[in-house]
Image (cartoon, rainbow over all chains, first blue to last red; front, side, top):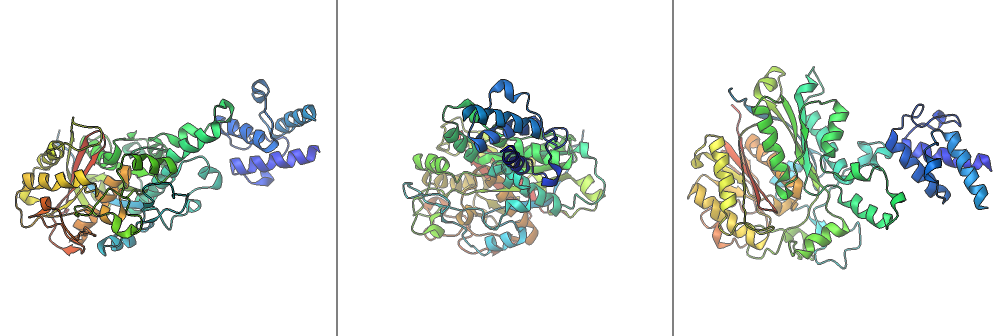
Length: 82
Length: 412
């Protein structure tokens, strides 16, 4: 389950930031490692919401700065929903 | 302070004739219309269903996929045209002082498609708005992107004056160099209005031609059977440069910019001044700026949009200013590529420069029955005319009653 969420998050990140899939790992930070700026970061969260058909609460959104953190937050949201 | 001479050293376009400058110019000289039926969305409910749409342009050749998603089409057109003009001017070879290079590429409307799609998707849900919505929509963003791409730190701005945008951009860039604020300016306009609300909005004004069954004959400036303009899209950018700078780097000089005139109509939001007063003032200011006598001018690229009122007035103004000049020709290339709105002034400035370079006046096509006000003027009907062109004028007038006139000269 977790792996599936990771793969989907990774796909969104690769598409939106135009980075090489090999560059992206669970520990990659959007801004530090993947070259995102603050606008990219907001757009990524919107794209995650669309991909997983969920709403990431504002206060949670602010603490998501890496692929791993996004995966964890989305997993929690999906668990709550099920 | 002696003002600097300004020359044109590079041209770039994304047009209804494609993105290759010389091929596009050849088609314009041959009198080929680029107007077609709109097929990218369902136009069956629209009064006007035709446009001159950009062809042979692939944004992937200019941008990465994730970049394309973040910019409106008007930005893609404008940045691509700027890149082509930059290349055409040979600016990438040799060392230039990037603090002395500026950009002024505007748009009449901006990111209409982005605004339209965001409004539909947003639907009162504030959380769904892309953070790239504003940067994809605002009109100065082409100038921003171009400066970032090349590191140009000179004057950076844009003009938004409806259908005079492209000409104001060139005129103000010319002044910027005259005054010594920059050595080089990338100047022009871009427009991407062929969207449902763009087409619908201009249709609602009854501004557009409804001759949908014969797209190639629909744009007919100065002809008895004209019924409105044909909407068009694209971008055109000119590289302007101080003569000193161009000479020093051995640039190819295409023409010289020698005059610019502006005025306001103070009359009506969409109709031109009934006596053409604003247009006349702009032309006279441009002639004065260029220290020219009316008889010196050989070719005029008319605003001539194919609307009933505007086309009636412009030839009258020309006769008031230039009298019966046997060596003067005036054509409207909009007869072939429709009205590119914010890009019209810059695209038509490109034709004016090439008319000087090749000593040929491009034609006004579809001019089967010229209206009376054209009597006594060589309107270059239907076929290009080789002629001596030392000075060419490009007129652009816009909604809101904004008028510009540019003078281009043969560089010796």
